Image (cartoon, rainbow, N blue to C red; front, side, top):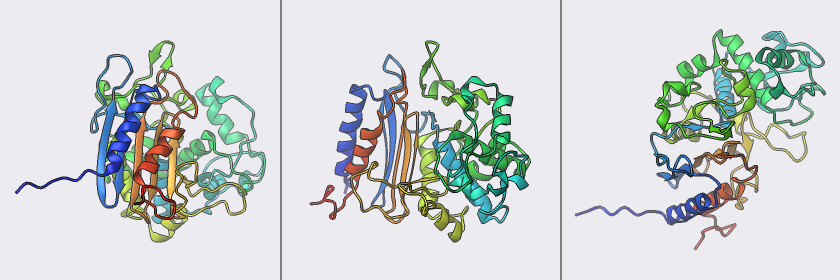
Length: 356
């Protein structure tokens, strides 16, 4: 007797959405990973570029995941808290030679919640690596930490410097040994030149040529060969599903209960109109029309067209990897697609989404 596999209705909806997005040139290709109601589905659509190019492959296609790097590094920092190496109250000036106003008040919790603003107006993309590092370490803060939410690459870069100083080696070596290898994320790297280049999905055209295997984020690219915590990780859909499953299992093997609860809780109670956990954004209706997500639901988006949405209370995971910046950046282009994918999957009687 043959076993019949029942494909959820949302697979057809997502297929239509992805094909329409490719037709509308939102992106040339994408992979999507879903965990919903104890089912897991991995999907691939389109090609690496609109022109003749290899088809996107679920297992082999390697993506520049841009700011998802921030959440991965931030989650690793939380694992260091669980291990007792550091705490949310650890002062950054006790570890790094930072200078300027308010730096003696700056703590790890402020870096992880993006509640600092460097006191500089410099355009970092016009500077050299050594100048960028000097500004980050020596500018001081515009206001006291913890008062304003300000989501910036420089905060994550400073977090990476902090982790490196404590661990005594480079960020890539730290994450590979302590995070990627234990999670069997064997195709995740800051160094995509070690991968088969034909599998790396290109991002934006620069000087008429697509960036392939070179980080898209300009500041992270200027700081090469140093790896930084703001952007630069390349990964595959199966690897990011492994990472996401660890979060869905409440940080199993990496985070203790207290740290996990802190990571998934809003850290901005005193800052109006903002909600953010430790290194993760909190759910907003901008991401899905369903207002019944748990208070601990997490999301991170990346400029290249990537995102991870997690709700461990609902055992829900949606990973989208695309190169929406190809051939040129289109700010906001992923907004409707990402929202529509989530609304195709979620079943909610209260909000009426996909409810019979």
